[in-house]
Image (tube, rainbow, N blue to C red; front, side):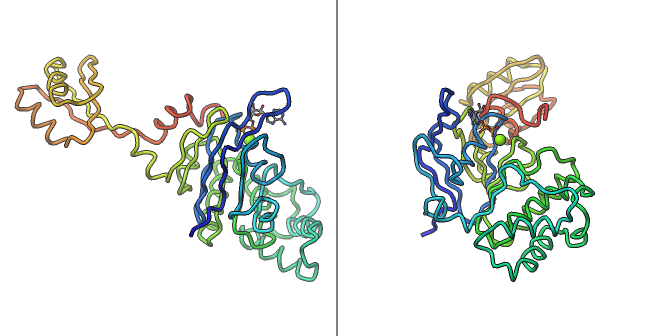
Length: 307
Ligand SMILES: Nc1ncnc2c1ncn2[C@@H]1O[C@H](COP(=O)(O)OP(=O)(O)O)[C@@H](O)[C@H]1O
Ligand SMILES: [Mg+2]
């Protein structure tokens, strides 16, 4: 049996006097996956993550990490919810040693080795002795991730790790997450940016107003939406009639174009019938919606907008 890295059932959080921030969320995060937890700002991602980690108590519902309550599994989990505070005048290495010393479970004798390994893992070995304040944004975020890697983790939970980073820093963090996942660590990463999640995640869950509105392997999400056939023609009426007679759904006519959901019908069959019906075909396309279209439909708003 494969125990999911994260499983929640009916997870709910109502803040005192407020609305429901998280509403009956059933998450299943398979072990070994890179799970993108996607949703617009205010959709309940951080609140969910805080409950997963046992930082706040759910109003209702349950949550387990590797089949255990959060408390029992925390030594296997590294988390970055709000970046840890780093001292600007200390080097990256010195900052990690300070954090490591604050962990009562860590053996002080091997602290230097742990810090060195974590820095190596995020590609900061060459900058280990450099002061934090001289780090680029990408280096700062990599150091934050290094702080979660001071001991061996089976699961890494990262809340919007690329927030505020420039494209270079974003690329650095994205590649680092891929490397960490390649080592067998499950990664649960939240984001309000679709493009980012699409590029690095094997699974995607979508939040909208506190509810999980979709959850599936990334590859299945895009193909779930209906593909459409679009015919460019001077005789839109005749083209639309052929599409309707074929039994295709959602037939639409616009100036110069007729289109419909193609369903399981072979495109060759459609073009053949159009030709036989004497429809003058200027253009013929099958359009498969992008993941972006799917998400706009699910969340009621665009991603990557105004961020
Ligand atoms: N401590 C809190 N008290 C009251 N409301 C909160 C608190 N934290 C978050 N919220 C509200 O819960 C909703 C979800 O917030 P959050 O989980 O931070 O969303 P996200 O991380 O997706 O941006 C928002 O409406 C937010 O204002
Ligand atoms: Mg948040």
